Amino acid sequence: MEQQRIILSEERPEDWFDLIIDYFNSHELYYGHGTINADHEASIILNWASEHSKNYQAIVNVCNERVISRKPLAYLLGEIEFASLLFAISPDTIIPRSPIGELIEDDFQPWLNLEKNDRVIDLCTGSGCIAIAIAKYYKDLQVIGTDISEQAIRQAEKNAIAHGVGEQINFIHCDLYPPKEARFKLIISNPPYVPSAHIEDLPKEYRWEPHMAFDGGADGLDIIHRLINGASERLRDDGILILEVGESQLAFENYYKKLETIWLEFTNGGEGVCVITAQALKDYFS
Ligand SMILES: C[S@@+](CC[C@H](N)C(=O)[O-])C[C@H]1O[C@@H](n2cnc3c(N)ncnc32)[C@H](O)[C@@H]1O
Image (cartoon, rainbow, N blue to C red; front, side, top):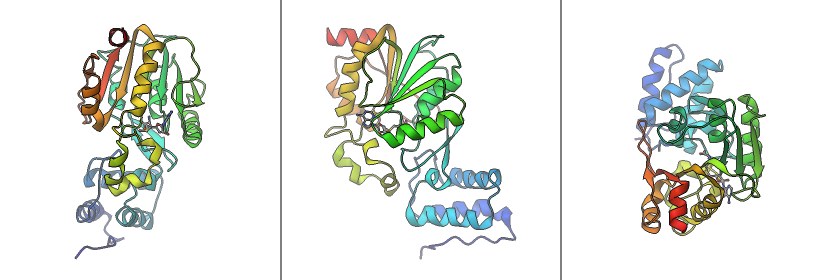
């Protein structure tokens, strides 16, 4: 029979790592909100406890809640790593996990060279993780981040200040693109792309995240169409769009057969992210 609650001996902390793994593995948990398996979650919990001086009871509580509520670990701990940076997380925003983080850490090579004064916009910014990671890695750049959720914008602003890049990023509460301004060298986005009918079928962990972070309409492409149309008018001639379409890659490829799209590969896993150049957009719309 399944054990509902974890049993850890307070006197034997050396056993905790293995016991947490066994406990998680004996339950049906989904990993994919910034963690990859039970071992990863056990090590994050023990690191968190030591970093924040949490006691034995706090560890037991987190493990039990993870199994009983199926809440993603990042919400239970209030933090998660993205692009090697630690982000404070609240239930108002989706948990950062986009493979775009790896691309930022790799300096966008070989796709893009960002220089001082280049303009960058992160659409659908959520916690602000992408905009903030770019600002951290490129100290001279000014970045814009937008989101339709006011709570997300507030969380993103707090995160930017916590990372010391509050002055570098302008977070705007708006529907996709802000009013038109000068053209961008980089438009980057991890927008909602889950087909509406699939949302109910996602593992229980997803129910703790804001619904509007997922809903991409009937075929998952509603926001993506608007994003592509807008990018064609807002990119510089040497600019690029980096777009995550996740599980809607097939629907995207079927719809945009004539748009030259480069699909990226990631060392740390993840797919459904593409690069589209300004020239490709120009050709597509001409
Ligand atoms: C998949 S989440 C990505 C968040 C963040 N970029 C990340 O990678 O963690 C999508 C985000 O898009 C926002 N969103 C949904 N519709 C939007 C719209 N029309 N305009 C701007 N943001 C929107 C949601 O509030 C959510 O924060």
